[in-house]
Length: 339
Image (cartoon, rainbow, N blue to C red; front, side):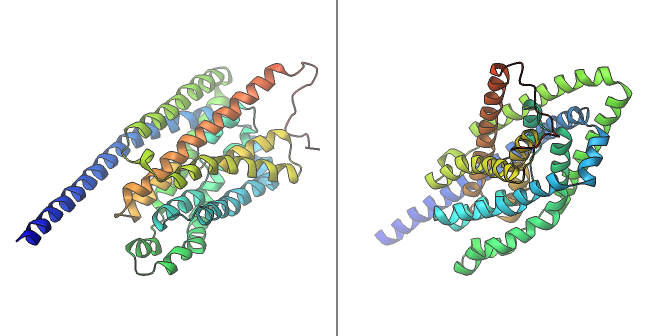
């Protein structure tokens, strides 16, 4: 009788725990739906503003001689997944956490890199072309990276549910296509505005960039505070979320320097490498993983917060340097080479 009573209590506690997890998942999904709408509006505003900076001749030059683009794509789709994989092995992450880190590392560049590049006097034509190209190439490179690196966990934990889900990760091609369209259309509109009304486009650029970036930053902070789970993540996962964007920035910058790109392009490639499309990562997790979703959801939020934090530190340091440097030392344009 006592054993039966204990079993009842255990069942009730388990049921209550499962209900709590389901409620948290429902709450998180509702929150993400609201955030997605606001995020979409902010991104549209930013992309129109960024389109106002595009010089079609320079953009065509990047596409005609895509050396800088090739460097950034190597950083994005070779080094970032490799860095993510190395970190998961180094910190001996559990399969669920490791796969979340790997998915983020396999994602294309995020739109906020364009804003950061603008604030650091980067090559805007290169920045925008990198974002568009990485989003397009993600259609093929994302599943390839996930196939190569996820086998470590799908083979070792063959019988576990997380392993079976990892073998069937759903790449959201529809969402990637939507992201691509949502980049091209507002950028094209911004280019049209800049050519038709050049004076007004400068106002749109300043106002749109400021408002759009502010919305993104506020959304990242508010969502991190309201979302249930991110700050209860395991310490190793939290540490990876802090250092992974920073390693991405450093990798992009160092590789750009090694191939003798200009300082302007080095800054641009660094920002594009470190900033990932966290919204796409969250979408993949929601589609592909039903169990352990809460624990896996923690990583995209941690990464997003710290990619913005590190980026803003970089922007602040650059703006301080810009104000302190001697007027005689003119600004380096994109045609100058790194020595």
